[in-house]
Length: 209
Image (tube, rainbow, N blue to C red; front, side, top):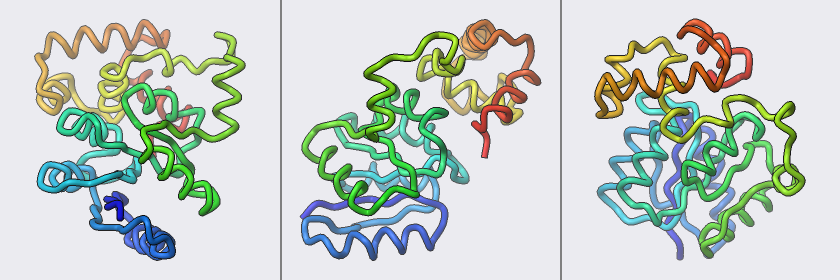
C-alpha cells in the first residue's frame, strides 16, 4: 500500500481526499499537513510515496515547498492539486520538478489516474494542457511569466507579495546581490520597470491568491 501525504490548508479538502482515496486499497493517506512548512518537515522525518500539494498556503506556499521537497528528496513524486488554472502555473511548476498538475475540480478518476501515473515514474498533465504543449504556443500567446526560470519565479512571487530584496535573500538563503540579479532579469522578461509593476502583473494574471 502506497503512503500519501496530503498538503492543503483546508481541513475539509484533506478530509475529502482521505475519504475518496479510502475506496482504493492501493493507497492510504498516511499523513496530512496544513502548510508548506509542515509538509517539508514531514518529508524530512518520514518516507512517502507521493505528496499531494496545494499552492496557496500559509507559512510556505506550494511553490516554495516544492523546491524544498525536491532538494531534500529529489525522487519523491509531488502532484500539484490546486484551484489555480493550468495556464498560469502548470508549466512553471512542472519545470520546477512537479510530477503532475491537476485542478481540484477534476473528476476522482482523474486524480486516481494521476497518482498511479506519478507512482509509476511518469508525469501527469491534463489532456488539454498536453495538447497545448504538443502543438506549441506562439510567443504572442505565451504568458511572459512562463519564460522565468524556477528560481526567478520564486523570487517573482516573493517580490509580488511586497517582500524587500533583503527579505527574499534571507528566505531563499541567497545573497542580496544574487536577488538583485534575478530581479533585473524578471523586470526584463516581463517588460516592466519596478516592484509595483511586478505586483500589478501578478494580480492581473491571477498569480496571487
